Length: 188
Image (tube, rainbow, N blue to C red):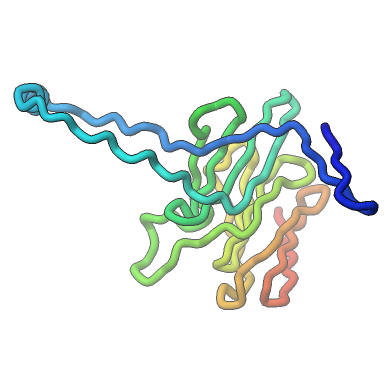
């Protein structure tokens, strides 16, 4: 780690960093042998598709397991809004892709995609919490991020749920919102 003095009361750190660039898994298209023959006969060169622009990451959360496995979960904005991606440093593609709250294909016609506002693991590391702008909190088992229980107690018109935490024994869920409400749930 390097330290550079910025002023008498502050400094700038330049620690070693690892980066992760999200990439969609390639789609394997089924080809028809007749189409391949026609394509070869025409000898028309196709243009390379443009390099995809990675989606913006709005929140990230890091987890190191007892087995020393280092995973992270990110929430996206833009066209991937409403999705969570689980990744691992060194892996080219994501380990899993999950819905932040409502499954996008189950949305009603006038319903908007819920956007992630915060992500965190419980202090026990047994649960993963996500807060959303629709006023909900999702609680997921850390080992199975595809499953969740959704709690809604905050006004989406006031900015939704802005933070959540589980008690040390994972028995109580506390959530706060931009609506000024502190909600406490007993999880049994």
